[in-house]
Length: 447
Image (cartoon, rainbow, N blue to C red):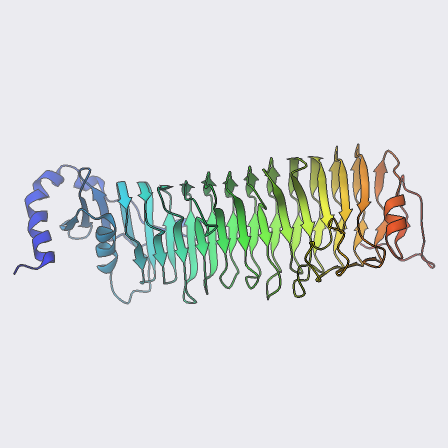
């Protein structure tokens, strides 16, 4: 019996003449994508995968110029090309996808050092995980990816999955079950997603980071999904840089708590027109949120919500500064959820600008009686044309040692609510807000 591979080789020979007229056009330059987004020349790519009619795909060896494999199955064709790359290599080789691909079987990548170049490809996926990445140093470049019954375009899974990149892809219509269009799952870390447009993924997260952390999301747009990005409770030290979020239901960024997470950074991002929920939910410690803009947030959402949850999620020691809030109904909620006994403590909110906001701060928005919201500090902020600066629903025993100092209120406002509801609230050194319970001696202003 003639083997499947030999049959495919014979088929390739039959069609070789038909392909010869365009074969020379299938050798684009191979590239390597750096951790900060730089692109530089790399080794030659080894295989081109394409489709020559609506039903068949081929894998061409770009060294020998031979068409080695043909199949009606796109995944089988790509898996063949990947399997024929140089074994044991320490350099990156490329599989170039050209044309339209219908992927109904998962493509599992177990070899490291691969670039999947999709810049001239359109991929329609009907399988749950389109690409299932089980090795490190695997990069994806470009492509228009559409889920047609699929929930995940790329899943990174396993503790050997390090230093992977997704650059310049458009990903849409991957629906359902909050799995994540790109899912950095168990064990994966040091994943970079940059220059991508992830949109219109109903019922799903745009991104789900639930590995070991250290991921970077750069210059990426996430819009019109059920939620933007979920960061797991044991997934620390991720960065969101110059990203745009819009139209998402539930949080744009959800930083879960209760584990070893935290130490995330969100900077230079633009959040606008969320559907419901909030833009950033913080349930873990030691995050930095700075140089962002929050705009046009209705009463169905909230700008930033700081909250511990249950007994083991502690939203403590976060630093939020140099942000601008414009036309926001609820800018910040500070305090636990209704089911919480965790802490929301020692958060520093400073040097932010609030313009045309309705309610800027609500402390303990659910009136929780078991958690502590303590020692939170509000310094050096500027409030312009805001309606209600401070509101609180917390019993005095739960809202403790709040400091409001050196802010600029325009026009003058009243701090009566926060003064009478909280315990040992201190208000001093502000423009447009009378001092209350001023400590003696007056503390040295923070830097």
